[in-house]
Image (cartoon, rainbow, N blue to C red; front, side, top):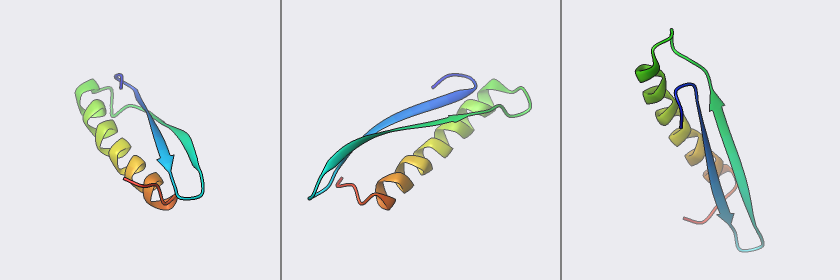
Length: 59
């Protein structure tokens, strides 16, 4: 996490295989670093949750 971006790495373990994903977001909200960081944290959490569900990752 930094003022204008975020990166998350997840390990996906499934019955038939496993793999790792790197997810990234970047951008700013009207030059407001604090608001941008808050929004990136919220978006990244949704992004990670969706990637796990879509790829049928355990845990």
